[in-house]
Each structure stands twice: as structure tokens, then as C-alpha cells.
Amino acid sequence: MKEKIRSLLKKRKAILLAHNYQPPEIQDIADLCGDSLELSIRAAQTDAKVIVFCGVNFMAETASILSPDKTVLLPRKDAGCPMADMVTPEALKARLDNLSPMPVVTYVNSTAAVKALSTICCTSANATKVVNSLDAPEVLMIPDRNLALYTASCTHKKIHTWDGYCPVHNFLTREDVEKVKQTYPDAVFMAHPECRPEVLKLADNVLSTSGMIRYARKSKSSAFIVGTEIGLLYTLKKASPNKDFYPVSKMMECPDMKKITLDDIIRSLEFMEGEVKVPENIRQPALKAVQMMIDLSLPK
Ligand code: 13P
Ligand code: SF4
Image (tube, rainbow, N blue to C red; front, side):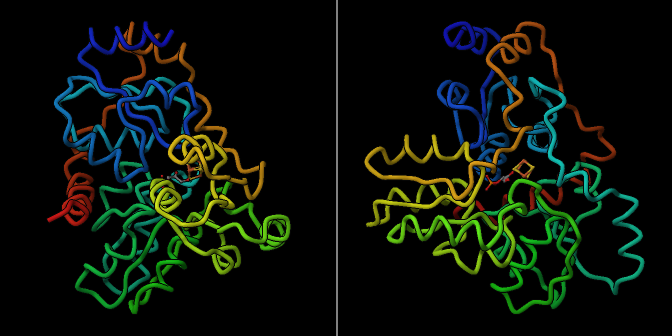
């Protein structure tokens, strides 16, 4: 199946991008695995004609926003992100009507229609940098409350939050972490900023998924407790085979990130099925917010 996918990718002049939470067999055939920021940058830079996105809908939409002339395929159209659906354009407009004018910083885990109403996007890898780059004392950060609260603890700016959350990360409690820390007292605890503040307080480091991979590789420590979706354990072990990684909870599995199979990729490439295309009236304003974030994140 892997050979078939590689030959179909060649035939279609396609590139396969996979998020770090994707199943091992998909990560192993991808041209690039990464966090949301790395995947957006790669989607903007590739000269491939087709982008097969193994992740969830908002990631494929971001690729379509950045590359309107390419065909973006999401091999399972029903792979979504529940957090992205926790803010709608109507609800955002209503909230803005009740706030003094301020920039809207939107996590990429959001729909294209919401991005279109935003000042700038951010990811878990650059949220503080994005907020600090804005010439305003107050910002509204949507939709992830936990990312917003974490960013507030890293900046002097006033952050207004939204009541969204990731069901996978928000599930984790301080008690869960304390239990695992007792079992592995010497392990470094890395947590994703989508976790609750009570969990992040216990973390040695708060990082994006690729941030965790880089940090574990460089660290002098040899054992790590991983506070994010369990798919990252495979990626971490692959990058640092001599180190030990323990999930903070085996319950932290994102069902949407596990929907795509090798069969789906083959079908998608054979029949060009699962195209994600953002309409031009939404793409144009959404591009401004995404591009502003990318320009800020690329090395100068
Ligand atoms: P990263 O950008 O850190 O990879 O996170 C994406 C995501 O969906 C986390 O739940
Ligand atoms: Fe969305 Fe959470 Fe799944 Fe990431 S882990 S895609 S934020 S539901």
C-alpha cells in the first residue's frame, strides 16, 4: 500500500503532509510531519500541484487559503476539530459588538470563516510572539481558553478569552499528572498549551507538538512525561530512540486525528476525492490573518 501511495503521489505531482498526531503508518510515508505552524509554512512554499493533508479539516482549509491554485485533498472529509466549531462568525461578531475595538488573535484551530473576521492567526508554537507583535494593549484570543490563559501568563497585554477548549487536552487534570509524576519522579513533564492552567503549572515546559520533539532531542534528560495526544509518543520515540516517553494519560486520543487510513489516501489520490476549497470571498480576508502570522514566524 505504501508503494502504491508513493507512485500515486508521483503521478499526481502531489505532496503528503501529516500532522504529528497521525498514525505511524501515515507518518512513515509523509513528505513532511509537523505541527500546525510547520505544516502551514510548507503548504505555502511547496510547488506540488496537489496537497494531500493528513490531519483535520482546519489544516486542509489553511492549505487551501495559502495555495488557491493547488488542489488540497483531505482523505476523510469528516475529520474535524471540535474546538474549531466552538466559535462561529455570528458568535464572534456578537462578542465584538460588546467589546471596545481590539485585535482578534485566532488560533489556527478554527474555521476559514472565523479566520476571515480575525486580525491575525496564531498556533501553539507562536501565540505569545503574535500577541506581543500587536500594537494594542488588549486583544481577544479565540477559541481556546486554555491557550489564551497561558499566553496571558507570558505577556503584559490584557487578554480577553473565549470559552472554547480541546476535549482531548482539557480532559487532563492536576491529579492525573501528579499520579504519573509519582511513578516517574525524574522524568521531565512537557505539556501542550491546550491543557488547563492547573496542569500547565506542573509542567517543566509548555510546547507545541514539534516543540516537544525538538526539546526532548536536545535535552540532557532521558525520560519524559508527555502531556498531549498519545500519537505524539511514536513521533518522539522515532526522533529520540534512546529516550523514554510516558503518556500522562492513555485517554488522550483525538478520534478525528485517527480517522484517515492508508486506504483513504489511495482512494483520495485515485479519484481526487475529498477536495477542500475555501470560497474566494472568505479566502481573501482569511489569507491576510494567516499570512501575517507566517511572515512573523519565518526566520528573518
Ligand atoms: P500543534 O500545532 O502543537 O501541533 O497542535 C495542533 C493541535 O491540534 C493540538 O491539539
Ligand atoms: Fe482539535 Fe484537540 Fe484533536 Fe487537536 S487534539 S485536532 S485541538 S480536538
